[in-house]
Image (spheres, rainbow, N blue to C red):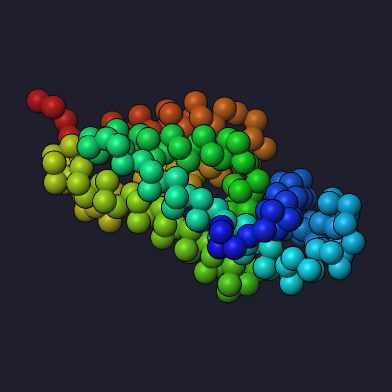
Length: 197
């Protein structure tokens, strides 16, 4: 969907992110969005048919962005270095665009509609698509432990990342997510790397 979004649609998504950040899902209405953008409501409807479509557009844009950015992180053949680069890139991106964190972690968002749930699921699947091969290759090369399955390891890593982002969101973005994220990366690697005897 990234290529399909017009410049105006991207501006609307950005404005929707600001409203989500300040007012939550309940505050994201076409009326509030039109006011934020200094548009008429009908002008918003020319670009998106509904609030749901705006949220799905935001989540789809994020999924496509993650897919593109993480696809570029293949320079290192060291799985631990790839692991670090993937998560550093995620923390860098969200530090610059915190409204995407709000889009994923807003109270009530997952209860909105089935289509929004599917967009969130797509987002999780894209993260898993990039993380799973790094973990599997790391286990095959003896870099990461084989004490747990690659599936379990991916779930533990993604759950830790999600908790970190949720803490940042609930702290109203008041701490340095890149520094905190770096500590998280190092802690996870301490847990999953094979111990050198």
